[in-house]
Image (cartoon, rainbow, N blue to C red; front, side, top):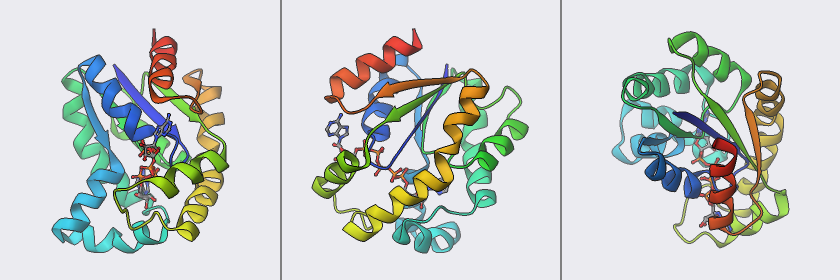
Length: 182
Ligand code: AP5
């Protein structure tokens, strides 16, 4: 099972992705975590992407596609994955389809959340992410609507999209995701 979670910042991709992967018995991969890990370790990649993360901008497509596809190919052979944060653009989705022999996703779950609820959640998050100040949160939401939201139509046209109301308690969101996957 290969599940892709898309949604605005704060929609709950990480919260749900970790739990869903456990339930499905597959790997969980979050591109934001992978990139932040490179920044923390000070790798070449980390130095290249740090500014994008801090500004709430997307890292260039070619950089992310290479990193993600390297991680995904073995996972796809090993039962699948829940993928959080990739693709973020239609170009990333198309590139991944070409690079991965079996395609990127069986199902794409869109966690649908109003911006004002997303802002409240990110304001209250207590793990101190460098991109969680008020202006950067606003910018991340703008970037989501401009760059990532077109994926909703892209996957709808392909019959792969399942929409879930993310404005519910976490356990209810998880149940709704499991319902659309079954
Ligand atoms: P990334 O790490 O993916 O961040 P994001 O999309 O901004 O998402 P968040 O992690 O903030 O939110 P989430 O939807 O995971 O929600 P969460 O479960 O954490 O990306 C960071 C950066 O990396 C990007 O800006 C970009 O620079 C770069 N990047 C990553 N992927 C890229 C790509 N493919 N291409 C280019 N660049 C890329 O929950 C948020 C908060 O809400 C938590 O406190 C949580 O406890 C709470 N919460 C969750 N669910 C609920 C609920 N149901 N009810 C109440 N509270 C809830």
